View 1 (spheres, rainbow, N blue to C red):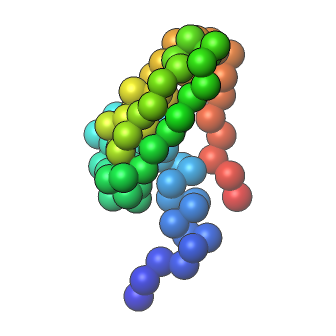
View 2: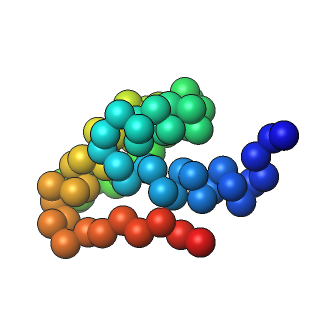
Length: 75
């Protein structure tokens, strides 16, 4: 049986903030290879990030910039 949309969101939320093999595997599974994050000029992590590897790059840069950032699973 296929996952419901809510189940996919819950799984993504629970693991996207995990910078470990489980989190990386989930992100690679859930994000389209053409996924793009564009962060505007003026931010310390400005740039264009592509695909699951790009997600981890920008995620790590955000964490190193905003030391008080917290990821909390939703739902």
